[in-house]
Amino acid sequence: MSPVDLAVAALLLVGVVVTLFSCLGVLVMRDAHDRLHYTAPATAIAPVAIAAAVLLEERVSAAGVKALLVALALLVTNPVLSHATARAARIRKFGEWTVREDLQEGGPRP
Image 1 (tube, helix red, strand yellow):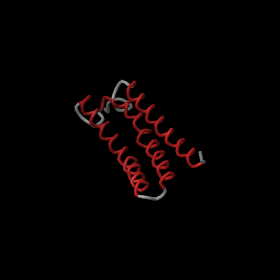
Image 2 (tube, one colour; image 1 turned 90 degrees about the vertical axis):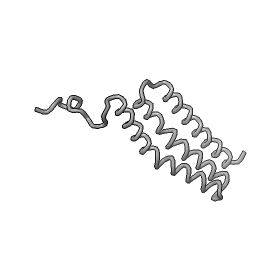
Image 3 (cartoon, helix red, strand yellow; image 1 turned 90 degrees about the horizontal axis):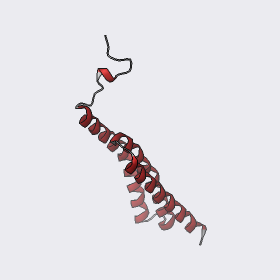
Image 4 (spheres, helix red, strand yellow; image 1 turned 180 degrees about the vertical axis):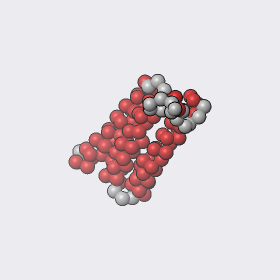
């Protein structure tokens, strides 16, 4: 095996292991807010590692460019999707998305 093949295998292994641990974290956590923390590595680290592996293997070709675009799309949309999911979970739990006065630091205002 060449050094490039080893690097590709290592990057793919990183992507798969990170995704596996993220899935296990989502499975174990109790509520939506805790689960959201475990989705970030699967949409940030794993796609970048897999896109890098594709680029090493395919060079700058159609497959390499597509892999980069998919990784970029996941990196850009994950924060927005996480925020929207957290807001929806809060609305479902409390009926509103704003911070209620009884939950603010220091208690209710006089």
